[in-house]
Length: 358
Image (cartoon, rainbow, N blue to C red):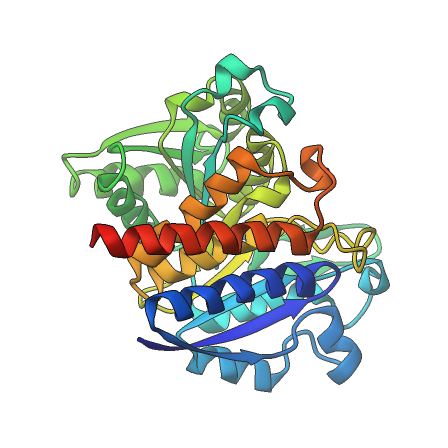
């Protein structure tokens, strides 16, 4: 297979973890006889420094022409002035809108070895395997904004079509998992949430094989910590999803472990680890690359349809988590490069095993 992949390393530790993921993708291409073409572009703070824009036109156009996009991270103290005309986060929001990626998928699995690093009791983490589906292009992040000397407002607006498409993605994903969807809203207060809940109830009739339940976002925040193993696919609007998925990261033991995929109607997607740019450790060589490597596995799965290759990468990461020294966020002292070497070695083993099995 030939595939075009745009790289957006971004800011802070973004280039380091993206570089690790690219090494793994190159190893996959070699092991499974694919041809991946990489095209690096600027986004976020580094793009502002170079062009004055968080999403230069050249970056946008390259992404629209690619099969998939792998992002590192954006932002940092250098660009944190809220009054600045251009901010790194604007580039990411603009890119999501340009690509039409409306569903952000964030899988959360708890590895037995890293469970001890979570503040949640170990008995509550057994069997945790969650998939968040966050609506990504609507709500208050994209609504009208006002500001004067005495007040400010952020409009939260959703259409039925926007809600339907992300709910259908959640139900379809649940069919391939444990057949349960939890729709999260604030229907006791917000009109947008009442529309969300009514739409969820209607869409659910199209999927009689999938069980639907509703949860208010405030109670879900508690249940996510107290009973996380009881949930399967969780779907919610943009702001609620942003908050809850970061909360869920504590279940896994570190933000550095978790990947994400942002998908639209077609196969092209935007893939990135859920952590930020971590400027305090940028350039020091000990950022955890696993979230980025697992994001590359999601890229192989969703955009390129390479199931065996994606499973090989995931299995290689699992082997590293089982047996190898880990990075500082996981209580070890391994460098970014060393973790990448471990994954590459495990991947070669898994790739050979996959070929033999085939």
